[in-house]
Length: 135
Image (cartoon, rainbow, N blue to C red):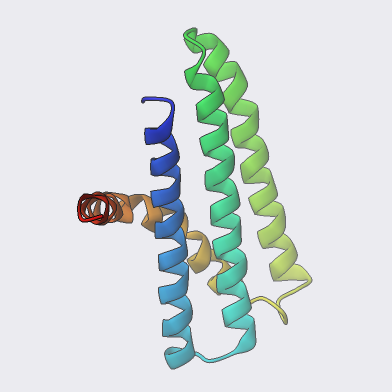
């Protein structure tokens, strides 16, 4: 993976995919299940997905500079565990304490934007390249 402008573009493209998925899910929720808790849950899930992705990108960016696989593993593993512990804690808090404010299933669906963003990235990249070409 090249470190530099290509990495920044990749981060922007995946982030855009996460936001597009979140926006599409919110629009669908307005039609299918128009409740404030669902909308708030989708938004919280999208924010969690963005935070997790940006944390992973920062971790990988710092690790790419190192050549030693053991050092990379030592650096990335604790960050990964912390990210998932935070995600589990937020989901538990939503289910136990804040289910009136955030719909738990909507939080999970919003968080799936992390996967959708990576799937949308090639299409977003093609659109971005085409847009730069015509400037």
